[in-house]
Image 1 (tube, helix red, strand yellow):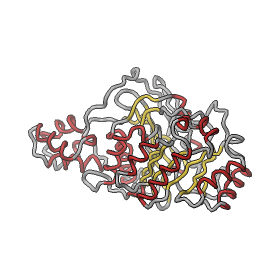
Image 2: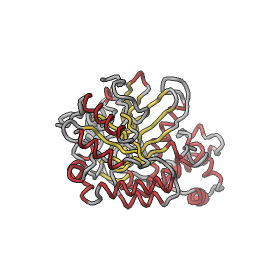
Image 3: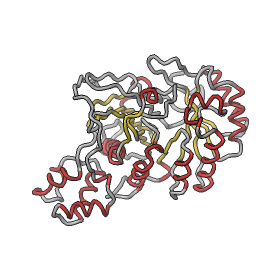
Image 4: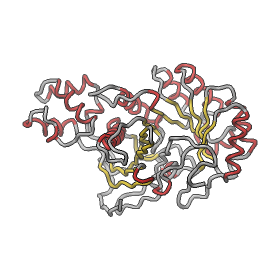
Length: 391
């Protein structure tokens, strides 16, 4: 769709207003009682909101006289769509959201024949400062609230249910925390979001743990904390280099927690959950795509419950970084597989709307709104080298 110029006031940073999704069920029921309504009204509000219903006129099971009062108190608008761009025949949709204080984030909804995945943001900006990531170069604005994170998934689920994506009405099946920000740096809100994604109606989306992926650049204490949660969501570790010397440069947090510590924490998560973890590896021409690094990565992960997801780096305006050429990609894959490490190459879907990995919002220009870059990769399905549409 055509983007319309919008003018907003300068962003004001502050805590988002209280929202039902930021509260536990008990807290929400207590809040409704404080408003002079029976506690079960909280369940009614939750059932509507988690289905994407924001129009109080559609909340017909709630008395008309109190709908606006309850909505103003517990269902404030937190995400305002600025624009939506589509690609892949409309099956990939990138939405730019404005938050209550003017900060911007993006999410990407991708529909496949057998699944629908949304990539969501957990922070406005990112403090990890990875030099090949446009978001990291812009720095961190703030953490998102749980309701702001959950709201992105709720909007995607509603778009699927309403048939807004070509293919008719459907169901959101997968959520990946691979948008803007480092999810584990916003641990309490991400943990609360996980509860909502997994909880059955009316207090959640009812997704399976296997269909939710949490990514991290390697915040070891947070990985250990997630391990103790008793969840079995998919863990994705953005490694990007198998050796500390290079990773110190590509992923600066590595100066605090080294490659060996990150992999050890991921191994412990796999042992506790019984789930294989994913190793994300952006292939950058002449930087980390050498055959010897493929061999080193293979030795590092051989025999472990790990799967390597290679990501040919997507271009961003003004960046000196470029994707590895196809022959280098093929050799990298071959060497990893020879070491017995399962390896796939990520689909580059959404690239023409700057919706692929490392591109989100890098090309956005909205009058009066600061530019924000968001790396929200298209996650599924993995493709074999030589089968990519973009060659």
